[in-house]
Amino acid sequence: IIAPSFARIFYRNAINQGLVLIVADEKFTSAVEESHQLEITPAEIINATTGARTPASVSQMLLALKEYGGILEFLKKHDISELEKLAK
Image 1 (cartoon, rainbow, N blue to C red):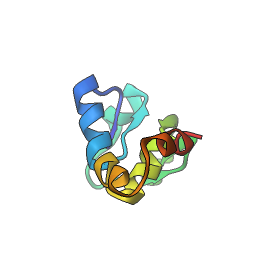
Image 2 (image 1 turned 45 degrees about the vertical axis):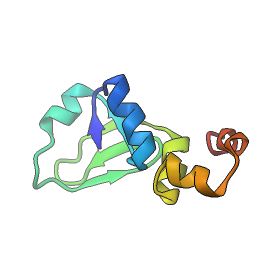
Image 3 (image 1 turned 30 degrees about the vertical axis):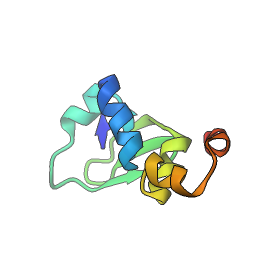
Image 4 (image 1 turned 180 degrees about the horizontal axis):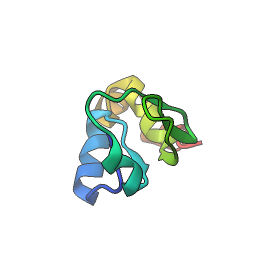
């Protein structure tokens, strides 16, 4: 999910569910249309349809938790102390 910002409770629920949230510039996000193709890297988002680019902030921990299906699934198989390693 790409947006200029996220409410704290939504962000927390995304961690629980393993959703990846990407913070990007509001001007960029408001210009994206449903039919546009986006390329996402850890450092930026590229609108392949229009050529527009913007820096992006992608949490490494969220990317890692996505692979496990969220924090709850992660904690079923790992100790909470291992969670800090995901953020690095």
